Amino acid sequence: MATGLTGRIGIVGLGGTRGVKMNVLLSAPGLLLLLLQGQRGIAGTISCLATCAAVQLIIGAPFLLQNPTEYLSRAFQFSRVFLFKWTVNWKFLPEDMFVSPALSVSLLLLHLSTLILFASKWISATRLQTKNASALFVRVKDNRPFSPSYIAYTLFVSNFIGIVFARTLHYQFYVWYFHSLPLMLYIASSSSLSQKSGTNDGLILASVADVACRMTLTVVVEVAFNIFPATPSSSAMLQVAHLCILLILYQAPVPDMWHGGNIPAIAEGKSISNRLKKN
View 1 (cartoon, one colour):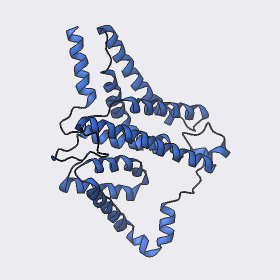
View 2 (cartoon, rainbow, N blue to C red; view 1 turned 90 degrees about the vertical axis):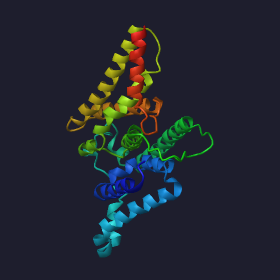
View 3 (cartoon, rainbow, N blue to C red; view 1 turned 60 degrees about the vertical axis):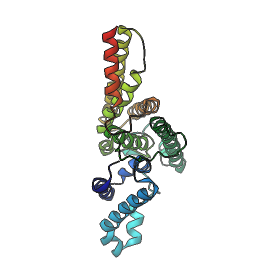
View 4 (cartoon, rainbow, N blue to C red; view 1 turned 30 degrees about the horizontal axis):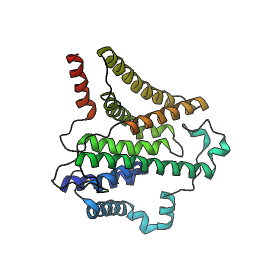
């Protein structure tokens, strides 16, 4: 992560964003991992979290001073029951199941379990990159900032995991993640493709198939959000696409964490091109 004034400005911006819309919390697990892995360490992470909290207190001060109980209860309505007619992702479920607490608890457990799986994958990858097999969180010691691709990919994947296991998605929620799908799939799928071996024709076919798969998944998500009202079929189509993307992300290598490190899709794409030329 960026350090000094730039990093602090970013944290303040995050706190301000959280004051506008709570969906930014879906990226919080990824941000927490980045802070713990970066130069900030545990003490710096606590300082950053305190900064976010301070921004929230400043934004909410007029309401907290006037009616704190009502303000906090409305801000965190965990018992809220969503309307079945507006859900885009769970329309294939019976309505009584959709509004049941059991579904909420199940989705929360799946969300947390998936975050743990991905966090373990990220930590293992950074241990290999830093050749530090003992530390739980690899702290940067030589002032090298993380690569932009590593930061963006980590935050976007964290956000997407929350989307997959969301209690409900409404049409306007598409703006939470539509812009991140191309980048995530580009990095993930191209990284996996570089590990394949074979003849020129085989590599070309694999490349074409990989691009077609990425484009198809993106289009499926787009189509599902453009069907109104949502139907059981469109919801099922959306969730299948989400799960396929999640599987691709989990199987793909983690981007290089260091500044100046190539995005795997670019570096390894060149490797494929060179292999084709040699053959």
